[in-house]
Image 1 (cartoon, rainbow over the protein chains, first blue to last red):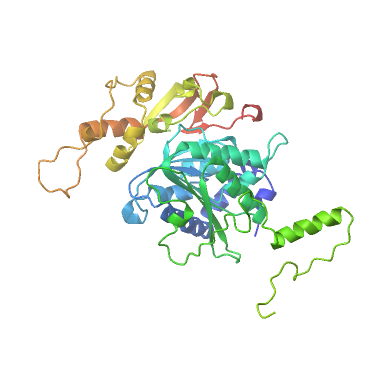
Image 2: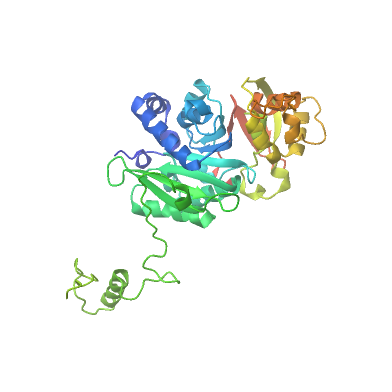
Length: 279
Length: 139
């Protein structure tokens, strides 16, 4: 899988030719529209709403948001506001005369809208770009926290946001979701086709209050083929420490002893494993 | 950029956060255009309670548009009271709803700039796209 965010910053990577390539490729169009529909299913909108599209690019998902209910957009046609950092991408969107309002803005600098503006927010293949900082005075954590804090404030109570992104590794997944939780969201990750090359990760965010049904477990209730894995506090006690005797605890203790210069048995696949019940 | 968006947009600069003067942004030297769209009555009803009517009035006065009434219309003002007894009939928008649609969703700022009332920062608007990129020290 190619990682454009490792090559250049987004405003430079998506230049005129790359934006055109992105927008005209029928393969990308299909993937984007599938993901937008999936995200809309999770947003569960029933009436025309105000939606924020973060990293709207050339408006591929915006076109779906503006479509009416008969054309397959639940609750549509919605009114949307999109922002993107690439001027070339926005240029393509202008040529296509998309219906939403466009902004040239960096999501990592915050979301400049009044509190409670939007019913919902959507972001398709964008927030992995926030995990990179281009200047020394900025950091990925700072960019993520500004974005999620701004997003949290601009959503109405009971609103939802679905952000599809391509995390590079588990660490990045963790970094993004913990930044969202810190901002106040109820956060959860939904993975489609996990373990394959086509894995797609959706960060489902809920704002408390209003009439929503809890966090992500409420969002996916009633969806087919979804396994819920709740990892909150698993293997940790109330204070967030590893449970005594667990594998993580044993490994931590071994490391501690080793750093003090003691002789420690090598760690193997049997370390901290439960004995068979027959033993 | 639609006037509806202007009703939600605030200054992006960190020091302006929380300052009442950072909303609304004041349009200057702006060129308006009308982009016609279909009226979307359920959306108008949905967004109406979220509008800051004072800001709508300020902006429309600054843009030289006709004077608006002092109080915001209510949801009842938007739907024509139907004389027929059929409940499932399509709701008919009133003149108030049509005017509101014209003002908020069809009137767009095409060129010009938006100025923050607090820090005087100018955001350029070109071809309807506002530039909200900030230099690093203002974030």
